[in-house]
Length: 257
Length: 239
Image (spheres, each protein chain N blue to C red):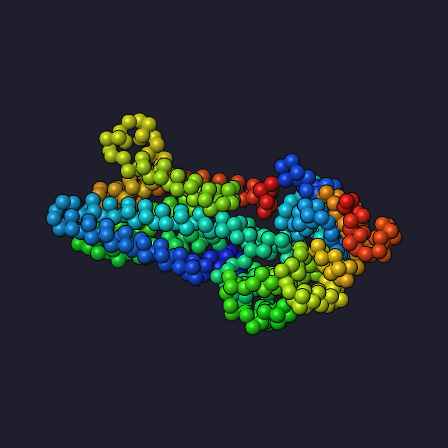
């Protein structure tokens, strides 16, 4: 039995005992309820095309999930430093790799729960179209890759700062920095620099892929590879940063010095 | 000679402050090794380096003939009650020990946990959240955690701090029993009467350097002082 499992289960229990996860799920379900209501009423009034509605809702699910996961993940590793529990963990045979993997699984579990909460809304909103499967599938795929990448970044920053305040500020800054250009209008995205930045921005690629699937009906993976590959590369880059950060942590030990 | 802890010329600095300066020491199997020094002398840093949670800037450390960096072999034979005593306050005492028993891969963990809780006097409060424990109770739980893997070498940094007199005596008795069973104990404390009562060998560190090591009799001969307090003052240049 791999040791990361114990860290994963411990963090899941911590999230449930402290009602953290449940609070996040309540918040996301409220956001989804309000947005779904607004979108459906717009649809009833023929103010919004059905495919546009799906695209907007997909963006909101992934955006909200990323926000929740980034905030939550910021405390997963830093709390071990701030509560001085890291020393006892390091003294056990637990490796840093298993420690990080356990924390990563805890973060992915929260994403899975947020996605599960979103599923009924997605089913209702996509009913009457042939896109329900693609909508559910692509939201899951793109969301999982994005959550993985952002969580690895948050963990890398956590090992560097070892404080919740700094980790949260840096992680939210990155998320906002990538979100804002992704929400620019098509006109603003037309110049060469914006196109280059858009092609490497993970959030831009998520939104473009959802657009490709839900608005342009290009549902095969091959037709979306141009958007999925930059996302995967983002994850690889974050993985490299995380590896570097854990190596620095191992060299420094529990005290930054 | 069966040395289970060997530190050779270890040094550690925090920015410009030299916490440990070219320290060499060895502890033999079965020793109850008292480690004394004034505040800021480098005791906690030394213990952290010996336990492998802090890397020395230079020097080597061997634990049971394994390099301290060989975590898999070292973590199995050592138990540590460290200075930073963080707990998962939402867990209860039993869950806390169970979590660490799993990390150490203890086979019969229910039996081990139950016996440890009994030994440290927490059996009746095992289902209570750690957040509600007093400082002394947390101290006892920390000691139980340090013993969870049945260690051959025990590092204790101020183990009886925060305990009432009865608690101090209980822990002292437990440590004596463990030492009689062959557990090597590396014991850092400011309670000099406790050190003179428990320890077979005493080392004194000052400004990161080892200034003396020996039995109480040897330290008495070296300093010309009778009680440990005066020995300590003489060795640390107390004015």
